[in-house]
Image 1: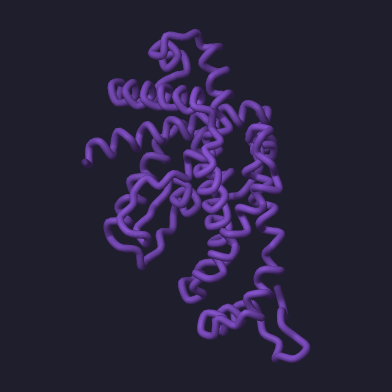
Image 2: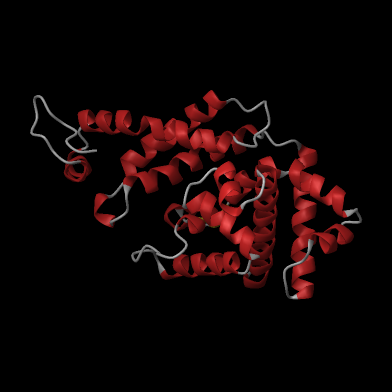
Length: 265
């Protein structure tokens, strides 16, 4: 960002400015950060909007995301050695999903179908001890493979939302979502409590057990921040195929974690 404050104040780098704001909570500095990172809200909202039903308005997503940006600015700790942009993206996306959940935008029939598919995959893969094929999943659901693929496309709009469900939660500081773990698949924040670190490890192990292409899509989408179209170009498949694989990856991952959680509780 270079020199971000001039005119009547001493010019400072962004890093210095964060340290000052962390101590002083100066509203002028806060305003600088809001203006600087406002485009990030539109960027995240644009990514979330992909695959959403037509009744979900882009401007509404942006509005929801602004709350996440304000939250990120107020809670960011510059001494934790994490880039603000990385931290803010997670907060902005979380705020958008929290609001979508609260307005209950997913049709009941789609939610029911998602649960059925997730339960079928969880049960089947626990029984097989390996990744189930489309054909095996379709058979366990009593449908043709083509019908199963259509079903996966129908529930694709809800898969991003479900990824941000809190998978483990004690108090506020112990919340861990699947999405958070994908966004930092290797480096875990050293100051998190041991239990939280263990939950993250379980999630990351589950991600690593996914079929290679599905795992790549999750990392490219959530960690490298590529769009589905860009991922399609990287993997040399169509965007709709990426969307299908993404949905399958999320559903399979949630099924794995549900099985693990049942084993823990």
